[in-house]
Image 1 (tube, each protein chain N blue to C red):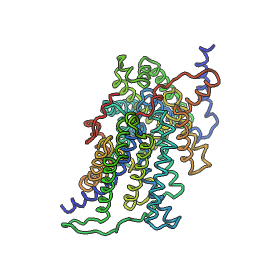
Image 2 (cartoon, one colour):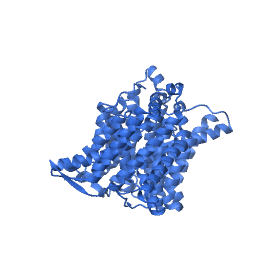
Image 3 (cartoon, one colour):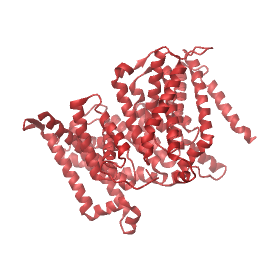
Image 4 (spheres, each protein chain N blue to C red):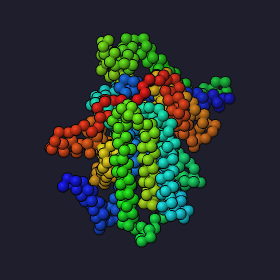
Length: 292
Length: 326
């Protein structure tokens, strides 16, 4: 029982970080109908921005984190939209997908060339301590990761539902034409979605890198999981992405502990295929009502 | 004269392919042979992507299935042709089984399902040591023994591969130009219209995907005796991306697009060897730029330049005009 609690908690903790990346994925999908195959690299890269801040520019950690966040929003949000997504929108969906795949190679190889192929130690945000709760040994880092990601998700939901800008963003996502008629600056709303995606990816990066270390190839797995979490939860729902992320985090840990370590990576994939078979709109998603 | 121009060009191309490896070293011949092999796989993906408009990210796993089946059967002493037929049949069936659920749902679910499938295939190939040799893979596959010649040397094996390639390409040519192939195109250009004209779009897309997968299996059947060593890493998701990029860079939906794309993806690392580690970065940047300026790949770019020189362009790809839809 104690072991089960430990496994569950650490699953929820990594799952909540996956959820952050998956939400970003969903936002960009809603705003610009863009499937970003470089999402994993978007989570890999900000950790290196922080390392550059700390090691090359001599910043204290807190300043480096802010530096990393802002740089991510500029590079992975603004520049991604202006340089890659916008010029390609008139060409249709397929070239853009291919371009994001190429972008993922570019970011990965670029990081490898300029920062090295070895995993870099990454400063943790929380103490590496553990505490005992009802016989279960719980890592403080796991608890804090879970709390911080949940706080980010709650904040984001409040922003989207309670503020004028957030509602405008939702309107833009649902029907750009109608939103435009009602006086919403849709271009700006789409830009916000890209900026928020970059920020979420950066935050996920800051939380997960102390666990996985900062490595150029981290994105391969993270991107796939964010992707799967978004789909099984429901591609067009934020709460779907959260549920999907948590579910994968927990299942992954449970399988690795109790069933098979060799095939732990297969679980999300099988889940993905099962969801597409039986409930293609996702566990919490609503059908988009598009037939063709 | 115009009637004979096209067949003459094809014959010229064939002659070039026959003469190209004469007097070259083993390494160059190996590169040429793997270009032919990847061209077959890319041709299959082109049917799925370029003609019926669905993204598949599992072409490498189909190559893998074909390669492992051929390897296991030829290592067991059966002739290559049996292994090849088994590989093609198996990949066709797997393609059907994989495509059926994914294509029931509209949208690009095939991309996601195939992505998951390729990763699953990699895991199975790595973990099931008793069958696949695990990380160490399988090695020492014999090369096919033809009645009139052995293909143990590299040059005869090149000609053998060329023969298979020509047959596969001719078959593809026939598929694309049959009423079927026209239906594929109709599907890509305007699915609603195709459906309203009585085309069973789901069945056709599924068929295109299964045939494309079988081409992957055929390419795998050639990889096995070519490299004589296979391991899970040779068929990972990254290789599927590579094959996808071949099709797109060459020009999806053009008959010769995948061959051009495969040539570039295979030969470019040799040409750009002096850039060392920067090769992939240069390549990725080039792909992004190409997608911005010519989403129809190099064939599309060439066609546009050609039309600018000769006559005004006609619109070939109506699906590219609709804006982002995925």
